[in-house]
Length: 429
Image 1 (tube, rainbow, N blue to C red):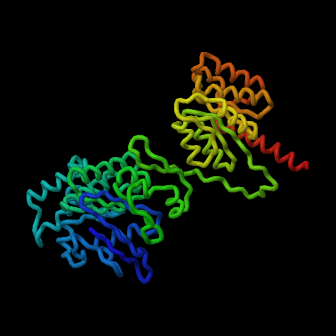
Image 2 (image 1 turned 90 degrees about the vertical axis):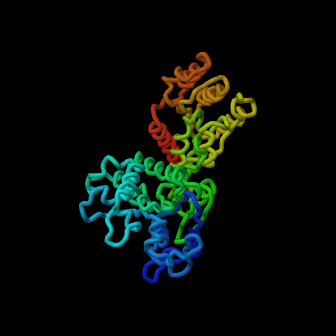
């Protein structure tokens, strides 16, 4: 199916403007974009429910509006976003409605039609509820039944408008796994409008990102699901990383820096230096960034999750290649960051001989009077792989004035005290 430069809408106002999409045989394509960008209107146009005001939609080179409705329905099936069934049909009756394009006028379903419908139910895992009322089903069961009805049409192309909307996360994965299976095993071409960017990235081979009624980006998931594209189209600040298993991009929201409504001349942006490792610093870094802090961290291994978070959030850090011991140069740079910070936080990271210098720097900072917070110091023995040296350094830091903390909330409370003291000093000047 080929969509070429279509405009479509309701009344005099176009919702879709100049959209072009190519859907090749056996494709699994996703359409993503913010609410109101024209995704549903596009599906309606492609399913002949809404004729474009200009442009053309072709099926194997033929304008879809020149194809007889019955013939079109034999090849293209649609699963709409919301289906309201006014009558109390059974599940099997609903699925048999998908056989309508294959039946003559006033014809009744043959044993073959029933077998095809039951096979569609079997494929969607709903055969055991074929005699139940459609109105007695859960959201996930109903969605499966609607997909079964579409399959009963024996289509070449399946168009779906937000098939996972309003479903629990387990049902979402079940539906997407089903669609992927139909695409691979039954050679059905799939185009799905999806609200969840991570589901779209995980399952689709190609994506079209819509915004303002037009296509803003298209291509493989890693070309479309980028922080820049999401910022531009959705107006949201996100962190986009690669799933370590699938190598597909995934999106984490909530990384926007907190705005400040006070002049920089009146308030000093708090500088917090975080010492972590093994992913223990990641939530601390992200939270502090959201709170509007200036954040630095180190020394980290470049393969560490903390390092990836720091890079994604533009947090300066001291880093070394994986499996490298902290050398003199890295330690010197690290200590310089510690000296400059208003507050230093040691996360509950594992400590070995390779990163022992981090804890030594923390101990020395506390001894020099630097405001230091140590997360869960009483449990340091569980993560000390230096034969007790790290635990002793932590104890020395506590005795020198470092403050223990049980949670990130404790760190934020201490940070508030630090900044309150700074504000008081500014007020006295």
